[in-house]
Length: 408
Ligand SMILES: Cc1cc2nc3c(=O)[nH]c(=O)nc-3n(C[C@H](O)[C@H](O)[C@H](O)COP(=O)(O)OP(=O)(O)OC[C@H]3O[C@@H](n4cnc5c(N)ncnc54)[C@H](O)[C@@H]3O)c2cc1C
Image (tube, rainbow, N blue to C red; front, side, top):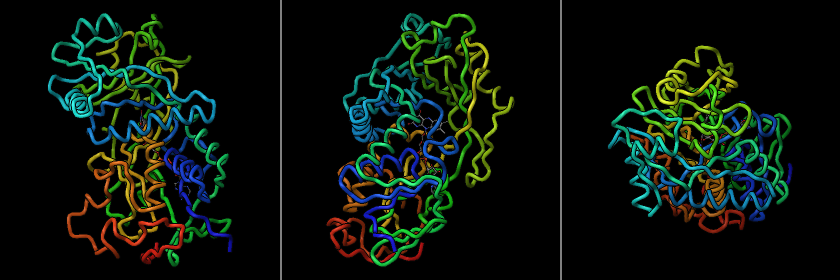
């Protein structure tokens, strides 16, 4: 038997690499297991960039986590000496009184964040590429930007390893189970033991965490890049913001041109929900283009031909909020899944929460909204001990007893 680890992290994508980093930084003996090569394009953390913002329309409860995430990304830049985050304003566009613009305003009000309401005239002057008819509201936020997603994952993995984590790529976890007070994890290359398990399996959580009572599904999303029709300057980030747009055709978002591929955009949600990643089609076909092209023709008319396209997976919860919690049946296990297409920006904060949950079963960061049990319609089976009193408030690694869970 190999020497036990403090924590095994199952799945080393965006969230798993953040958890490995935070645990290793705290001096824990960590093993990260990833089924694919590190920084791959068959999960959810690829496609060059990810938006980060602060006045979160999804709910004000996210804002404290966002503040932790921003500082985490800046720290990682300093630790690695790499540029991971570029500041760029974010413009939310939606019908007056609609969920998007009112959600941004609610978060800003509750947390004292700076936002700016733009008139149609302001919009024409500041961001001339847009053409929205009357009836829309425009809310701009300067505390926003984009992360270089693959560079971020790479930086998290490499820094975790520099702090002493072991990360094994191309080693899929075949099974795991509770063993005594800890866990036993099996791959084709061996069986590993640890006091705690963190499951950050992205879209594969649909299968690996089928017993946590969260009805997860997978949604294919296509990222598209477009050249400018003629005026490239209109799409540079001095004249073109990150945008989120809530239009009758559905929600769309985009980023300014930062390289030879040009403006990047995609629809948000709206595709079929799949039970797991097996149903995923990775090829992008001409059938993927019309909704985005129709959106551009209507609202951003100066956009030219498609230059690049890539498919990616969302893992959805029914309410589109995350799941970050201890496993409801197995207190040795912390889970983070169902990021519902907006999780990447939170990686450093999620890493901290997962490390806290693995170490003590608690966290100071507010994660009440992300409880796994919120989808239970019936009373769940009794936990071995009530939430927050499960016998492992002390360090999980100091030999404090944890109640045995079921099989896994
Ligand atoms: C098109 C698109 C655009 C997005 N835009 C944004 C955005 O602008 N801003 C934002 O904040 N978020 C955005 N998101 C969401 C964000 O990217 C995801 O929430 C985030 O990347 C999820 O990270 P993860 O670690 O859960 O999943 P992943 O990064 O996919 O990691 C899961 C890992 O687990 C591994 N794994 C699974 N099963 C096993 C196993 N049995 N053994 C070993 N390893 C295993 C997988 O191979 C994978 O590497 C977007 C997502 C998509 C698809």
